[in-house]
Image (cartoon, rainbow, N blue to C red; front, side, top):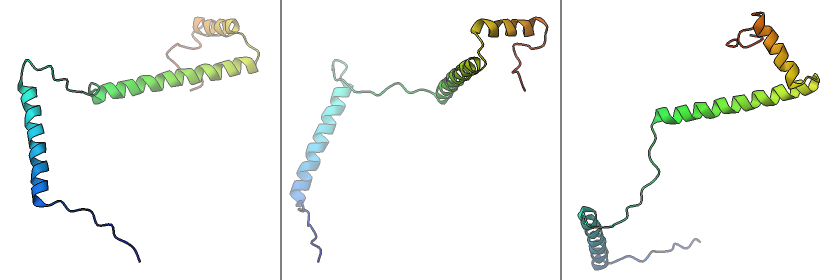
Amino acid sequence: MKYHKVSKQLDEREKLRKFRELDDAFAQALRQLEDPDSDFDIPTGPPVRSLAELEAEDQADQQKRRDELFGERLNVLMAEYDQSAGALRELIDTLLKYNVWALEEIPGE
């Protein structure tokens, strides 16, 4: 058999007393807010950012991550084919010089 814990019921007077205490505290807080000389410190959260700002930040984070991944893959390929940064730069300069590759294009696509 299960035992049911019966919570202590507040009588009507106790409920009314608690309600009055809450109402008084709320009224006092409103008075403090309306008082121009009050140094009442209202806690606020961080500033609200627009959806466009959040999307721009996400895009910047994604671009940064893509750039990091590209750099990692490039370093692995350079090590695998035993190529230095100078040799890679010389190759890129040669391709650009002879218009075989344009900077705006992605090689291999």
